[in-house]
Amino acid sequence: LAQSQQQATELAVRIEELQSQVAAEVASANSAAADLEITYQAQLAVQALREAEVEEAKASELAASETHLEMQKLECATLTVRMAEQQRQADASLKEVTAELTREKKRASEMGAQVARQFSKAATELDSLGVTLDQTQQQRDALLSQVAELESRQEV
Image 1 (cartoon, rainbow, N blue to C red):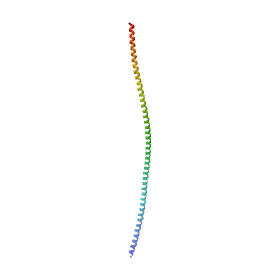
Image 2 (image 1 turned 45 degrees about the horizontal axis):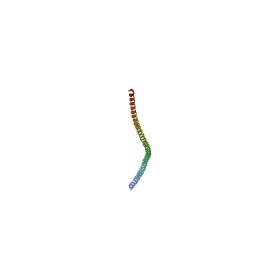
Image 3 (image 1 turned 180 degrees about the horizontal axis):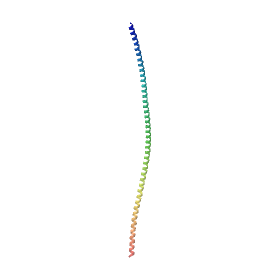
Image 4 (image 1 turned 180 degrees about the vertical axis):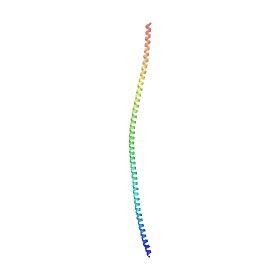
């Protein structure tokens, strides 16, 4: 009986030691789990921070792209306005040059008609002078014949 009691006492001590050991291991496991939970939460926080940084960078890049696009749209609109103004000026210049060309053609046509009239008048005067010259030559020839005839009579 004493031996059984001693064995029971030893077993009770061993059970207490094992319970103490189990409690220590549970505490250690709980501590490790708590550490793992803290590490996991820290990793989640770091990941969330990185994702937030990436999202912020994307948002910043998108905003910069939108700003650049808006500037390009504004530049395009400005160029379109300038092109329209240049086209308007070119059209006005072309209209002005065309009108000037039309006036010059009319003036040239009028000058051509005037030259033709003057040429016709000069040709008429030249024809008249030609007739007058022929008549004058005929008269001269007749007078020379008469002079020659008179001279020949005087000699005789």
